[in-house]
Length: 404
Ligand SMILES: Cc1cc2nc3c(=O)[nH]c(=O)nc-3n(C[C@H](O)[C@H](O)[C@H](O)COP(=O)(O)OP(=O)(O)OC[C@H]3O[C@@H](n4cnc5c(N)ncnc54)[C@H](O)[C@@H]3O)c2cc1C
Image (cartoon, rainbow, N blue to C red; front, side):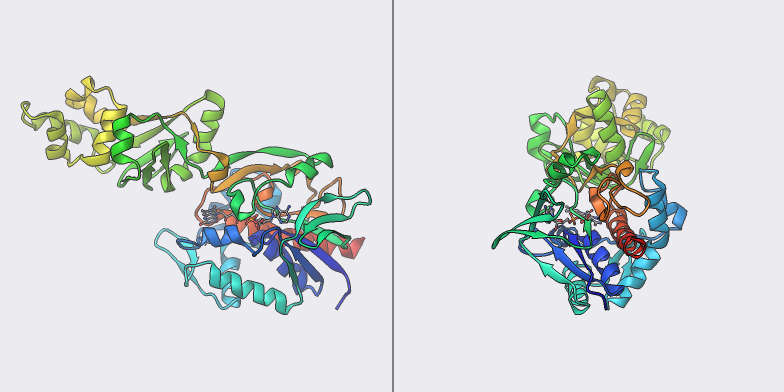
C-alpha cells in the first residue's frame, strides 16, 4: 500500500470509474463532490431504467460516437459493452439486454448499483468528501475547495477532473468549472445541447390539443439519418427518443441555417402508391378528415400534424396527400434550452489533452467523462464513454506516477 493520494473531482460514472481504477491499484483516493450526495445525474439517468450500455460489435459501437478522436475509440476498445457487463457482474448487479440491444442492470434502477459501487470503493479505502466544490487553483497550483468548514486547499499527487457537462445544473453538472479552466488557458469547445428537444411554432390548436401526445409508429429523418423511435409533442416543440437520436444533425442545421427540418413518415408501413390508391377510392363527398380516418386510420395527433405541416389545399389530391404523409416537413426553429438537454457536446478540447487524458498545460491533472468534447446519442453510449474515459484517465495517472 502506498501513501500516495489522488483527488478525483466529481462523483458521476466517469469519476467513480477513475476512482475504482486507482483504488484497485492500491492508491489512496479522495473523491470530492460539490453536491450533498453522490452521482445525482447518474441516478436521474436510471429513473426509468438505467441504460448503461448497448450491444454491438466494437466497430458498430464505435460508429455511434460523433467524434473521430482515436483516444475515445481506443479506450472504448478496452472498456466497452462486454466489459461493462462483466463489471456489473462483479458488483453483484447482473445485466439484462433489452430487445433492441440496450443493456440495463436487471434491477433497472441506478440506485442499487450506485450503492454497491460506493460501498466497494469505500471498502478499498476511497474517501468521499461531499459538499466539496472545486473552485480553481491557488497561486501555488493547489486545488481549492469550498466546503461547509470554509475553504480547503489540497495538493494531491495527481488529480482527475470528471465534472460533467453543462446541463441539469440542479443535479450538479453546472459547467461552472469552465471558468477556472479558461483562466488557466485550457482550450475549451463551447457547450452545445445534445440529445435535446427542439422548438416548433405550433398553432394554438395544435399546442392546446396535443402537447404531451406521443406520435407512435412513425419514421423520422434528418441529415441522412432515420429512426423509427417515437416523438412527443410538447407545448414548445418536440422531444423524446426519436428526436434525441436525430438531435446532432438537427442541432447542426439549426446552428448553420437558423432552423431545421424534421421529416416525418406518418405511415411508414404503407407505400405512397397504396396510400394514394386508398384515398382515391374513398367517396369524394366525405370530408378530408373522414377519408384519412376511414381509408388510412390516420387520426388524432398524426392527422393534426398533417394539417399543421402540409398545404391544406394539396391534401385534396390523393397523390399529393400521399406524398405529404410519407415526407412531412416539420420546421424546427431552435433547440430547447441547454440546461434541459440529456447531455452536452463541447467541453475540454481534445487538443488540450495528451494521449493519457492529461491536460498538456497542467501536468498531473487529467480529465474524464462528459466534460471532454465528444458527442454521442442516448442508448447507453454516453455512460459507456464516461466509464471508459474514467478508466483511461485512471490508467493515465498510474502511468504518470510510475514514470514521474
Ligand atoms: C434525464 C437523463 C437521462 C439520461 N439517460 C441516460 C441513459 O439512459 N444512458 C446514458 O448513457 N446516459 C444517460 N444520460 C446521460 C448521463 O447521465 C451522463 O452522460 C453521465 O452522467 C455523465 O457522467 P460524468 O461522470 O461525466 O458526469 P456527471 O454524471 O454529470 O457528474 C459530474 C459530477 O461532478 C460534480 N461537479 C460539477 N462541478 C463540480 C465542482 N466544481 N466541484 C465538485 N464537484 C463538481 C457534479 O455535481 C456531478 O456529480 C442521461 C442524462 C439525463 C439528464
